[in-house]
Length: 313
Image (cartoon, rainbow, N blue to C red; front, side, top):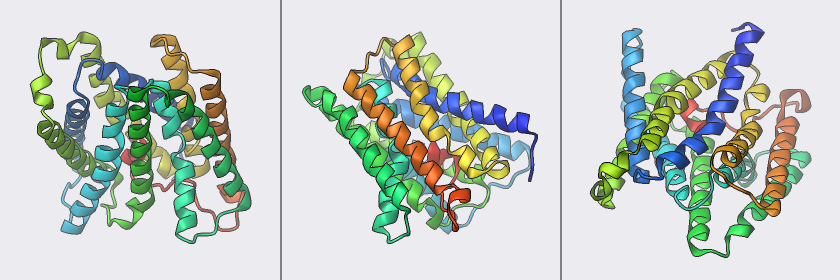
C-alpha cells in the first residue's frame, strides 16, 4: 500500500509531537489526580471510544479466546505495568527524565534479542552499551533524594515492562486488526489499573481538588490525542511507510518531552542528565541505522511492530 508523501509526513509529525507530549500531559494530570485511577480511566474511555468508532464503521470486534488472552497479556505488560507506572513515576520525577528513560526501550529490546540468541550486529551492540551508559547519567543525579530515587526505580521498571511487552507481543496471538487489538489491550489495561487503584485506596483520594481544570484538560488530551489520534497515525504509518522511518519517533519523542518540560513546567535537567539524554538519543539513532534494511541482509527492526498501543505512553 502506498500513500502520498505529504500524508506520511503529516502522520509522522503527529506521532513525533503527540507521543513526545504525553509525558507532559501525564505530569500535569497527576498533579491532582490519583495516578493509577487517571491511567485506568484514560484507557477505559479511550478503548470504549475506539470500539464505538470501529463498530460504527462496520469493523467486527469479535475475537477468539486466544486473541482475547493475548490482548489482555499485552495490556498488562504495556499499559498496566508500562504506561500505568509512568503515571506513578511522574508524581516523583520530571516528565523529561521519564521520557529519557523510556527512550532506552529500543536498547533494552536489543538486550532481549541477545539473550534470546538472535543475531545482532556489532554496531548495534556498541550503540546499546553507549545508550545504557547514558541511562546511568540520567538516573545518577536523582539518586540522592529518596522520593526521586523511588520515582526513578518505578520508571525503570515501567520501561522494562514496556520492553518485555513489545518484545513478546508478536508471539501472543493478537487479533490481526491492530485497531481491534488496541481496543482489547486498552480495555484490559484500563480495567487492571482501575482494580489496582481500588485496592490501593485511590478512590478515597477523590475530591473537588482532584478535578482541577489543568489536570482534567491534560487527562482529556491523553485520551483523545495521546491514546486515539496518536496510535491511529502510528498504525497507519506501519502499513504505508518504511519501518526505519516510523521508528524515528523513538529518538524524537524524548526531545519533544524535554522541550515541553523546560518551557512549560520549569524543569531544569542537570548537565549530566542532558549528556545522558544525548547518549541515549544518539545510541537509539545509531541502532536504528544499523538495523535498517539497507544495512542488514536480513532486517530486524529495533522494536517490534506490534500494535499501536505497544509504543505509546
